[in-house]
Image (spheres, rainbow, N blue to C red):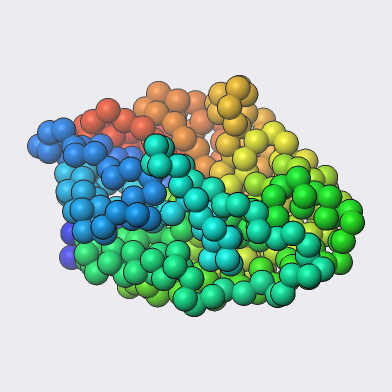
Length: 357
C-alpha cells in the first residue's frame, strides 16, 4: 500500500497501532517511537531553534525542517512532524498580552501580565487582528503547504485554561484572586474554556491537520483530532481549588478532542492524580519528574498506579531500559519513546518488542 507521507513509508501500519493504543489494545506490540539518521544519510542538518518562525522568515525554517526530516528514519510509530511554537504563553498573547523576547537569548520569551483587576476586565476574547495570532496562522499554513504529503504539522503547546489566566494576571496574583474574587475567576475560566475549540480548530485548519492526522507536542498520533493538554498552574493549588477552578476546563478540552495525553509536570502536581485519571478522554499521562528529582525509571510505582486506573503512560527509554519497563508495565497501557544511536539499533529494538510482547 502506498503511503500518504513520503517520509513515513509504513504510515498505514503505524496508524493502526496508534488506533489500537487509544483503545488500550494491542495488535502485536506497543507503540514505540524511534528515530535515527537513515543508514545512508550521514550527519543530519540541525533543527531550527526553538521559537523559529516567531521573528524569522518562514522559508529558511521550513527548508531546514524538510532537510532534516528527509534524512531521518522514522521507525515504529514515530510520525514525521513539527510543532510550531512562539513560546509557552502564546494563548495569553492571543488574548492581548504582550509577547516579549530577550534580544540576546533566542530560546525564551514571556508575557507581561496585563490584567490589573478582574472586576474591571471585559470578557476574554480572541482578536482576529492580533499580530501573534495572524502570524501563527500564517506559519501553520506555510508549514502545511510545504509539508504536504511528506510530514505533518503537529498541534501546538497551547497552555490554555488556567495557565492562560496565570500569564495574563501573574501566578502570584491569580493565587490571591482565587481567595478574593473566586466567582470572577470562575467566569474568566468559562470564557477561556469557551475559546479553546475556536482556537484549536483555526490552527487545525491552518495546518491542514485533517488531511493525514495530527499529534500534540507529546507525539501521540491520531487520524482525527488530538492534543496534549495540561495545567502547570495546578502545582500552586490544592485539590479543592483544582476541582473547582481547573477540572471543568480540562474536562471540556478532553471531551472536545476525544483522545488526549496529559502533561503532568512535577511532584507538586501528584496530589491531583486521581482527579486527572477520572477525566473521560484523558487517555494517557506524560509524567515528568522535574529537575533534581529521581530519574524516570525510579518512578515505577507511580507508573503502575496510573495504569491501575486504566490510563496509559508515556515512557522515555533507550535500548536497554525499555526491557525493564516492558517487564514491569502493562504493554497495552503505554507507548515508548526510545532513544537510539542508529537505525540498526532502532530496528533491533522493534524486533525485540515484537518477539517479547
